[in-house]
Image (cartoon, rainbow, N blue to C red; front, side, top):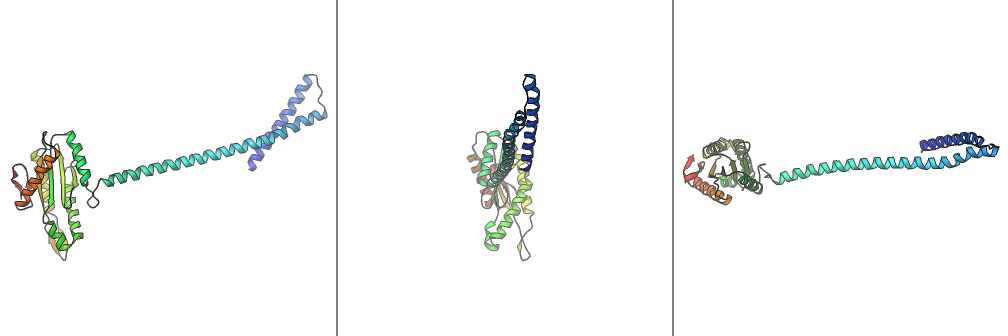
Amino acid sequence: MRNIVVKAAALAVAAAISSFALVMTVVPLLGGVVEGNAIVMSAVTPLVVAFPAGLFTFWQQKRLRNALSDLTFAHNRLAEAHMELARVHAQLSAKARLDDMTGLLNREAFFEALKNARRRTDAGVLLIIDADNFKYINDTHGHPQGDVALLLMSEAIAKSVREHDLVGRIGGEEFAAFLAGTDTEEAMIVAERIRLSVEAIRFSPGEGQVLPLSVSIGASRLRAQNSLSDLMREADRHLYLAKRNGRNRVVFEGGAPLAA
């Protein structure tokens, strides 16, 4: 407030000086005489008028600057809040697509991604991967140890596929992978790599025990005339054959076990 008063006083003095100089210059040029009262009025009137006017003007300017500063601060805070909200929304959207335990795509997200991939290509292989004898682990060693085994298997599966392949957990102990754009030979290499990676896991549920882990895999090749339901049914049928033929193997077209 002190700065406002000083600035208003300076403005009033400047106005008084200007008014006095103007009177002393113009009045004689017009043939008039500047008398005592005129001199006083030429100085006092600007002081009386300019000081409160300047005081009000400078006060309003300060209020406007403060309001602008507050508005800018609020705008920046709002922008930060918007960015944080967008970040959280992105995190929640991503999290909603992932399985809580394994971090792989959940069932809904996997099949949605599979539909999108199907629109872009008529070539690819679907693998349905099911953990063998998983009920025994849960019943004998408890569900927490079963979760550990699932996590180890999911990591082995994720490391065995190619970078652009789709991988998801589509059931309790069931996983799926879609190898877009691949042929039968390459798909079998990937499927066998998954099987061997799981088989190599050293799973210890406690008390010095080491239990073998394995998966059975049913594979089906995408064809232009087939729907996703057809693809799933064929892969499920081949998975059933892999289980029936002794587990820990891959079954592809023709129903013959290709690995064991």
